[in-house]
Length: 300
Ligand code: G1P
Image (cartoon, rainbow, N blue to C red; front, top):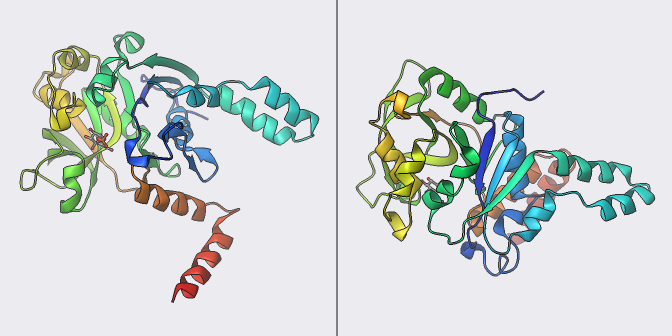
């Protein structure tokens, strides 16, 4: 059973060039790289649907046709599989195509995450919505979106997801300064800095790629200049919303995530994610564990 909530739309920016993954991503979108037996982006769509967000908007760019094909029906392939008696696989493919109501809009130019989110304005309209980044996979057995939706009910405004990272890694993320609330692991955000330089981070709390936002972020994004890395940054727009009154879309709270997150954003993290997720799977875990032990013993 999926839970119905007031938030039904998930925006997934997928227009990036995937330069950190070249040459694998020369002709294949990085979101389509397989993580065990599914493309990375499928985990994210499944996570959205499980939380009741079954309207998915992909912000796409060039070279993303395979992503569109992946979530579409493939009648020829389904028929061939049925003819061969592999009905189970045929069913898996049909269910995949029916997973969510999928929409696409092109970003045009990859000017940054803030720009990608602004492109969603027409589809989102005047309601709260989620933004989910494909580089972050969240353990399905301990999901974060339902907790974020509860925080939205309680406080309104925007809701972020934060994770404590090592001090030497905080420059890779948006960073939040926070104060406690009356709820455990729920904080109020008092400042946000995108990719802080050494010594400028107000905490070790990194912004993870799950956001629940209010439509008031759109006019701010429309007028925002470039920030860190010369890109239009979502974090910079959110920083402006911190002090807005709640009825004007303001106030930002965050859930501190203490579960498992798999980063697929660079080659080494991606390899670790594939291995961890495969080890968690019943059909691969035991054999893979034994093989890794033997392999490492052989190295010695
Ligand atoms: C983006 C956001 C950053 C956030 C990160 C999470 O950065 O700009 O604030 O911490 O995602 O993965 P990117 O990884 O696209 O550079």
